[in-house]
Length: 599
Image (tube, rainbow, N blue to C red; front, side, top):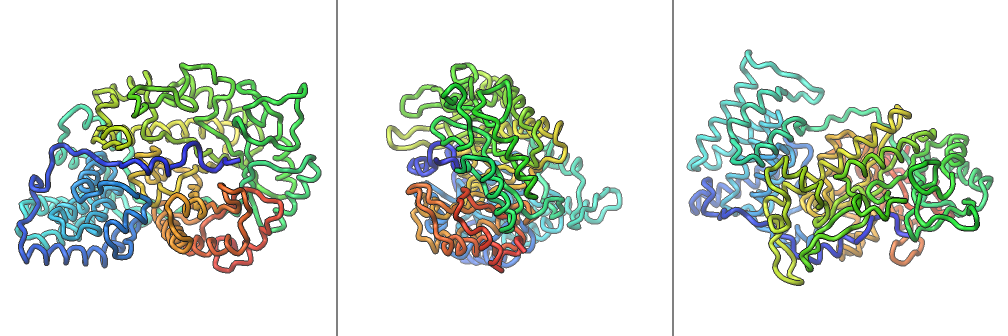
């Protein structure tokens, strides 16, 4: 049973070329493109060198990769066929800046400088990075960036813009008339003034852009401070127990606790084709094909397994989290076409039904709220949102979605306005409107998660919440947003208690076509990057697989510990192993001294 990654493999999506379409912008149209000269080349090389040395000091959320070619960078990011250019990178970074995602913009501008050091856009990228720091309240970094720009590109047409930026920075740093809010990290903030200056600088050209600025400025992206009430977790995620009576499960719970684990995450949903818990009691000789494992009037009930498991876990001194679906929780509603998700078939060029609920339909979301409220009637310690809280690059259409998007952006998300087809088998290009749509979908998914958290907290105020994130959310955020509507930075801003990163090494080896040693290095970097983004290591829940998804074979303990070694390079992270295996020596995890979070 593959419960660990919802639906179609991302590998199938990677097989299609994914490209951005610009708005008539060429390299020559960028006003900061300095003339090519020996002085220019020396400037951009110096800029790249200075970035490599200084940027990690100024932006904790960013880590430069080892020097490599752009093709190598793309392969390391899991992109095997993509028209990735300096122009496209610049457009994407600028889009993030103008949308209000200042931290994300700074990272993307930095990526351009790192991977295209000879591009004529390096100067614009350096200034864009300085602006991003300014709008996020990182005035010291903004001052340094603007100063470096003036030093490296003294003849740039954007020289006066950099001078104006420096003047604005000095206003915030030194003027006694500007109030500052000093935060734990020593950063100054005055969001209302920042947004006022931003609107002066970036006047929207359309209702769509105006709405983006308004929506994003209401909850500005801020650097994360490593202050949290979360505690480091040692977890096993349990799709099902194989024991046929609760007495044996009780003994297994005691063994898990004795091995050093402190939390179990148990599956409480049942999709068609899943294996049933062995303790379930078929009523009338048959069990529903889909449903849940807790009492509710809002979905078919397989059996009340959650109740006994909560008692057994707490009796053994373990915390217990309910692992529950979101979009795929259409149990009992499969015949309701009006509540179903809609997708666009690129080959047939028509909208079709897709798996699960339409999360833009408020009736569907209220159905989920009712389910989660009933689930919260049990003494659970938290909730893990299943990895179906995603919308792929062709999903998220329908009357309600179209109406909501048009009300906010001034035009519906018509497929012809989002994709430019290159013919059958040729993939698609993405338009600028597509990226607005992808971020808008991500916002909706997180809004739904917030609503579900609220109904659970009405009954369980102390409950904690874990969001499942694909590894691409860390290793390749641009394409995670495109393919899945996932955005780690946005999730952090919503304040989940834990961010579950699926560091499934065998799966990554297969999907990325990489050797084990390369994947282990990628996992090490991925965990470090996630910790920088989240801020608190204990909130990063690194999930490791102990079964091969494709073959079903058990993975040896030594191999798991090798991966654990890489994942634990960031001290204090939380750890989960997936799935539960009755024969796995969980105590071995505690004997590995490199895992500071498990001490």
